[in-house]
Length: 108
Length: 122
Image (cartoon, rainbow over all chains, first blue to last red; front, side):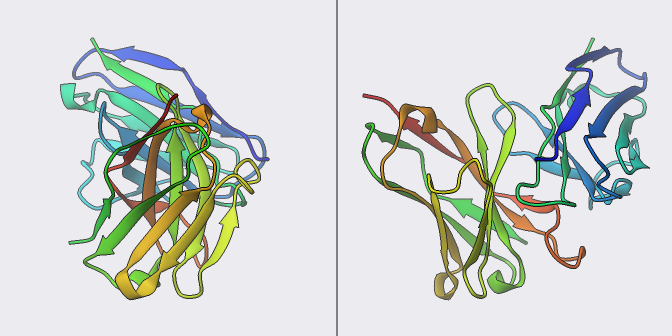
């Protein structure tokens, strides 16, 4: 099974600063990588697909990059409402379409 | 507006059976795969399986194969997740998702249901 590894597990960043979240695949997933945001008590929400395309309604401060095995989600100019757990998911090789274990983003 | 509306929370005893549902609206139900995702308490997301509502073909994660059954009734735009004998370890929130179609096959989840909490306890 293809394994997705996210780092760090917890990230604490001040408002207005930039957050960089990483996701690594155990082998290439090409650009078939999505990022989701999950706030407490809510369902996940799609942020990024195709490694770098923003989903409808997602603010421009969210950006994704990467190809193959290494991917990054960057959140520029953090706001308090960005506090959440962020998951990456590969959809290149199934089953299953594995998720990373998540990065909890805390706003100081 | 695309919506996936899931059935309500359930409390069951070990060994009991259960079916939860996910009804799609605001789009043509047969145009998109539906996946199910498990989230155990305080844990991450696990991809459980997905169904093509056109022909009810199902692909399961090896970790869940044989433990759950995914099905769909396209006439009422509804997908189901079923257990024949629940275990305490099935306690989790289960989400259904609508899979995007721009990947030429399986793809990311563009819409999510609100989740169904299943609690299994004696």
